[in-house]
Image 1 (tube, one colour):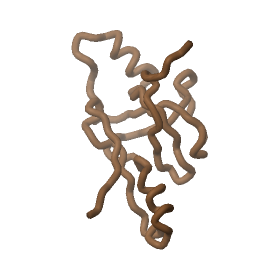
Image 2 (cartoon, helix red, strand yellow):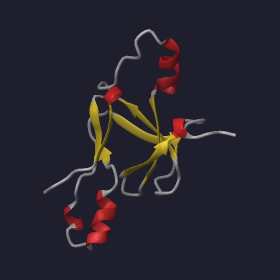
Image 3 (cartoon, helix red, strand yellow):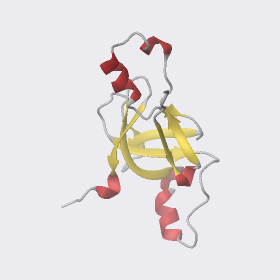
Image 4 (cartoon, one colour):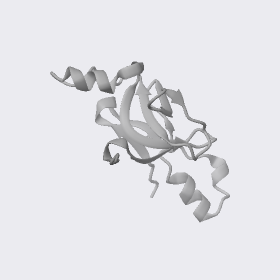
Length: 123
């Protein structure tokens, strides 16, 4: 059975990222293959994807360690939330859709989703 790991949002028309298998991974150990396959993957159905610092909107390094918010841009994104201009202004600030999801980008460009920023308690 072949299983693909994907990441997507209803606001962005479903699957936006997919863990594309690379042939060079075939010769790796099962543990190494599992680690690679557990990642969400690379951009598919959206025009642009960025992992960035939400305060500055600057991309974080693709080092697999620096956490940022996942931002999307493209023509598959919704136009906005019905009768909720405040949510629209917040969600599309800076010209990108703020997913509220936190992740890292590995050096090979593969995304790993780690958490939700909206679940974090700031004290």
